[in-house]
Amino acid sequence: MSEQAPSTADFLARIALLEAAVSARDITIAERDEQLRRERAEAALRIQRLQLRIDRFNRKAFGRSSEKLGQMLLELEDLETDVAASVSDIELPIVADTDKVRVLPVRKLNPNLPRKRILREPSCACCPGCGGALRAMGEDSDEMLDLVVQAWQVIETVRPKYSCRTCDKIVQAPAPIKAIARGKLSYAALAHIMMAKWGYHLPCYRKC
Image 1 (cartoon, rainbow, N blue to C red):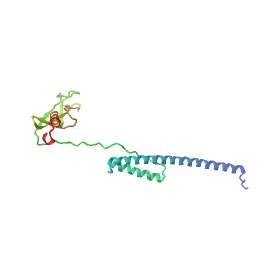
Image 2: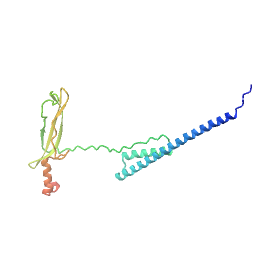
Image 3: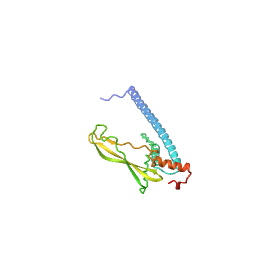
Image 4: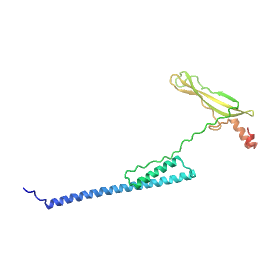
């Protein structure tokens, strides 16, 4: 028994299915092209922003290179490579604008100067939290240059640390108030220098 030849209606149905498949594929391709176009525009904008940042850092550094500048150059090169290769899945990096924390140097006063040691104990001999006994666990030391009867000396303020044996609470006397925060001059030394400079108009080598 011979097979029945496909009718005209079957051909038309197949053609309709093929046209629907082609139309769906065209829509998918168009959506993908639009997504690629948006990603390329975002990448180009990111490259422009990075280039502006690089120019600003170059002006601030007067031509000197820095670690942050090198990192942004690497990111810029990666983005340009991705755009040139037309990669659809582009990850845009984030450049950190935070600066490094500057560590202040610790300045030591002349060890040959006479020194006066002041011990500041806490106001109470027991734990203010629970009343327990205290045990020594270290101390903080700070130095200031002081002027006593036209003679320079170093005043070292020591604040011992105590910890409670019951609740481990740390007890320490408060630090004294300074004329200048983190300064090395006492009120008397600062007043002497200011008076010598603006009152007596002495040169620097005659102030000490």
